[in-house]
Length: 199
Length: 172
Image 1 (cartoon, rainbow over the protein chains, first blue to last red):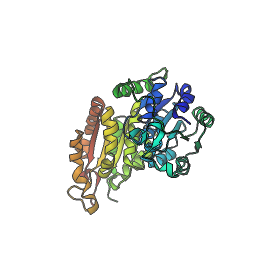
Image 2: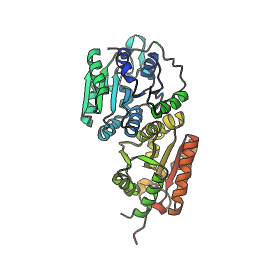
Image 3: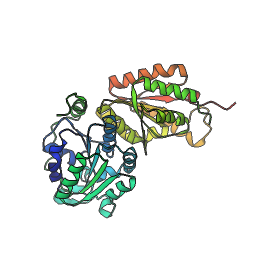
């Protein structure tokens, strides 16, 4: 399963959501589908994308928040899963793209070669951890159809959900993003706080 | 436990007075009443963290959503949160109000608290984070207001260091 295909599958449904992504491949590929002011790309502080999502979800309970995370980032803040689970915002969907490698910080290579793997390559089950942390719903998916169904269901639904998607350790076509971090930082809250909604 | 209930309330009221609606926290002795008061207040969202760095993200999210927030932690919690402070608050220019109980200064009886306190100010200074001490109850409200004003206008983290004289009442 390719990360880009997963993002394409949910892209139309992200229009009214607050979307927080991690750095690197996830940010670049979401951006490549068409930037929107309600997308925030966290280009550093690995592990904190879900914490930012939690702060938004608690402060705007009527807004759906979608966090697009990765295995490397989540493993840097495993305790964050327990904080999400106990806070249990029913408007947050935590998608974790699991490519079993620290791809975007140099752990991957063209052709999908993984030279710096994460523990998920050795059996660590992030969906199992999320479930055990107390997420009311946590699911591991391997096929695009299953991802699409689970993700769209979660975005439409009203339950804190974690979806772990096993994806290829493939580099994005380009890491280039023509939106400055600070431009993104200022447009994002403007979109979230505009009276007419995001779009 | 000789933690000042009255002054904890003063700090809490000042925090609410500057518009804070979300507090993320990890406990330590001096913070027990503050956290209990936050928990009992239906107008306040209390986020119980597993580690302090998460709170920097939570506060950034609250800011994006238009809410004012604060973090409650101890010196070691601040030291633990440094990467988040640099990689979120400073990098993205996001206001962050940190209330840090300043353990390890004169009068500290717990040997294990004596190290972290030594580095709190130098690290704040190294990061160019404006900070001030809260020592007397009458200075809490004005300093809290000044701290929040600077955080919002400079889009930066700021720190208020809660001092022993404010938070602790020696048993008579």
